[in-house]
Structures are given as structure tokens and as C-alpha cells.
Figure 1: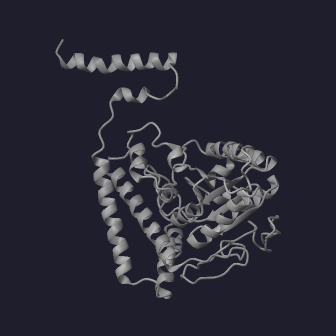
Figure 2: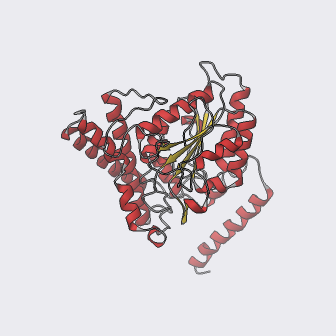
Length: 386
């Protein structure tokens, strides 16, 4: 199965492959092998300076270390929940670094790596999972929208925003922008995602749909989500789809960059399926050992996105031990500082939960606020001995 370079549809899959595609197929766009060997792709040329490669490596290491610290904070009762991105760093950093400043990101609840590339302080993400903010941050500050827990709904938001860009008349100009919507393989079974595909296709909206196929929709494997590779669904909606090695930061960068350029020039939407693996739990409330084999995890560890970039740097004599030690030390110090800042956050006042729910006064919210205030006051009355 191949993707037509002129933004066409995929051709039929290889005989004997019931899904139409295997992870090792030539249709999987890859620029850096798991062994750290650089390969070329005729449709996705990518020229990176040694400094840029070292920068991507630093991104990957920093993002993973932040993620590990957040998991630890959750286990220690300092965060209410955390959705780890372990194993998906390349998909997020690569696609994130492909974005232009004007582009708008619509994430799920796991895009901590994309948030990092947009310059969002990880403390704001931690504060949200600590229950200290109603939303987390101003979407306009970094063109990074709010985390979305309702599965798939952000794709509708992103498509509507993209249609707005289209109506601004800026496509094909130096002021052009696009949107990118992130979602997982499980979300492709949601109506919202499919409705987004319809609108984006019919209106030729400037949007990139970036599906991080991490093989598991919580405890449901991919084969219970789709009979065909996910990227091929785009064909039925009338726009191109492709599958990229989601553990290859080079390929994710090149593929997303090209798709965004196409969107900004008025060529419409693209579906990117980043074929990756969720090496951790779905969230910190999940136990993946109940539904998947350890051997599967061990096999994917050999495709670790960080180790392959490190191998490339070593192979090309582009970095030495001192560089790697420096990055590790920086990540460790950053995580320690992030922990300190997280623990120093003030506890919110109970009544804060009612703020900013609606722009105008709302009768039901006012009633609930009064009831909750009376409930809190009852404890004070009991404590006074009256």
C-alpha cells in the first residue's frame, strides 16, 4: 500500500496482511530507523543541522523527564490524575516543532510534549491536574488550546477554527495559518471525529488531523477499533491520509510540516496516523498489566524515540558524552524545580469552583453556590460547639 505523492488515495494492501498494513511496511514513512540510521524519503526531504538535531534530542529528554516527575507527583498524592505520554515523545515533539507561530493547536489531555514546544510552562499543566485552575491557561497566549477530556470533541473545535481561518481570506498568503487536532486511536470511533472529517473535507478546511495511534484505547486494542489502518479512513472522506513512524521524531517533523504547508496554501485537510506505542498506563488510575503482555512492551522499548536519536548523534559524531550528561543534568534540575514550584502552589478556596463557569450570572450556579456555602458553614458551626 502506498500513498500517492500528489495527495491521492492509498493503493490496496499487501496480500496476506488482513489489516492492509503492517508496522514494518514500506508505507510507514520513516527517516530514522530504531538503530539510529538516517534514511531518505523522496516525498519528505529533511535537512537538519547538528544543532537542530541536538535540540530535538533535548526536547525529547526534557519532555520525558517532566512526564516522569508528574507521574511521581500523582503517586504521592500531589496530583489528582496524570495521563503519561511515555513512548509518544517523538510524535509530539516532531509535530509540535513543525508548527508555525500562527497555527492553533487543539490537544487532548496527553499532549504535554506539544505544550512544551509551544512554550507553555508545564506548571500550568500540573496546576490543572492538581485541581487549582478551572482550565489551565489562556489559549491565545501560545496558540495552544485547552486540554480536552471529552474524547474527540476538540476535533470539532479545531475544524470550526480552521473554517474561520479560511474565511479570513489569509490562506496562501504570508499570514496564512492552520490548525492541528490531536487525538488517539480510540477517538476515531467517536462521532465527533467523523463529523469533523466530513466538515473539514467538504469545506476544504486548513486542518491537520494528527492521530497518535498508541495501539490501546485504554484497554481496547486497535483491532477492536478498526478493520483497516486508521489513516485509510481519510480516503472515504475525500482527503489524503498517511502513516508515519510515531517513534521517529525526524519523520513526524517532516510529515507534519508538509501537511501544515498544504493546509496553509489552501489544499485542505490531511490525516496523519502516527504509529507509536503507549509505554505507560492510560492514566495513573489504569493498570496496563491487566490487558497487555509484557513482551509487547519490551518489543516496543527497542524502538524508543529517545534512544534512536541518541544513536544517530553518536553514529555521526555529532555529540559527545559531555553533551548527553549535560542534557540529563538539565532535565533532572528542571524536574526538581518543577516539583518545588508545584508543591508551593497555594490551595484554592472552596468557593473558587464557581468562578468563571458562565460569563453572566446563572440562576442554577447561584443556587448551587449558596447551597455549598451553607454546607461549608455547617462545619464551622459544629467546630464552635454551638
